[in-house]
Length: 560
Image (cartoon, rainbow, N blue to C red; front, side):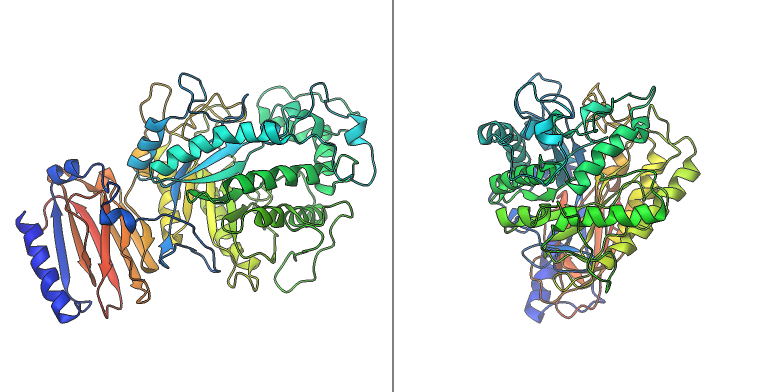
């Protein structure tokens, strides 16, 4: 209480004088009693709630997402995807795929502010009963038709109504949703999930599933045939057109939802085992899938526009989404196969204003059963190299709409209960001010996953990685991040940033449990003042007038 009163007195003097110079240091001690009392902060109506991250985010160009106040936003979260029927999570209780208010509250309490939530094409557009792979009405070679009438608005609306309930649960907990059109190995036909049965065209070749781990089916030649038909859109069924139509319906449904941060059009696009020439060809097909024939991008900055396959829709999936939703972001992904092999992402500038360069980082040296690294050093090195390269490559997508390139987001990593691996990755992400979503919240009987991927174990207990993932971090920065330092063993955390005088809203930090000692925690600020209540799990720091640098330090224990 004495420390709190002293802070108020200092703040009053500083306000009268027009704000402290950067050399002035302010401190606030938060006891464990304060922390316990503020466990649910900030409540609706609390002034602190109004300045937390909420509402539409933008991507004006450069490495950062920006909120309505002009603050740099760094999202931390988890993935939640149900890959089995009914291909979505539900608020209906006592189902294996139930996601309820307790999940949402627990996610928020861990400091996460985004969930990458799965939706599946086969759930949105299952098609008529009895229509399966290689149906001539879909898979006959020829110019794509306008549509087969497989899309049923009532079926899609009923599916999305359940998705919307989960989105609303998360929003009430102050957590964004990133809607992810998820697939692995394209379809259930190949022991994966994603595309409906009618969208599988293998030229009549039989599918012979590989023995062992599901991922071995990526080598199936019939899968390559099916994917080529999708990426080149060269069958009468208009596969991409049908897919884009489904996406337009999704975007229109959530266009005005303030807790949807955006859309991930296609999880892990792939065409494996490519030569360098074929890699360029696939990168062209992928970019055209995003843009459509009317908006061709380039594979590298300053290069000639790509030539899209003749059968591609005139408007690709990105402009389809943007036409249905004029506000939210679109999180595009590069070829997933190039990432672990060190190949460049190859995507280039695209003429759209709300893109986020969205990638996944996994290593090859992992157990095919548990997902944990078999060789930690090799795994860490490979994943850190991938993260560094991809963070740099996002600038290659620089366009007039997004100078400096779109911001980056690591929407999948982890799938492991090894804290050492997760610590290395999250620490590196901190240095890049890179947002992320851990895979995954729960296992959900994942047919294309690994047993140790869930942050919440079947018992309901948190996995050993939870303290690392639920760490102190800056959710919104009223300036440009300069550096971050976090020491897991001691719980000490330091954020350094250059304040933006045009931003009036405060910096917001989530205080992780590791930063709270037996006596609480101490906040020290140079170049600003703490404006949140003692013990707040969301710490608010107001920039001082005239400060050239703000340094925020949190450490367990008493202020010294």
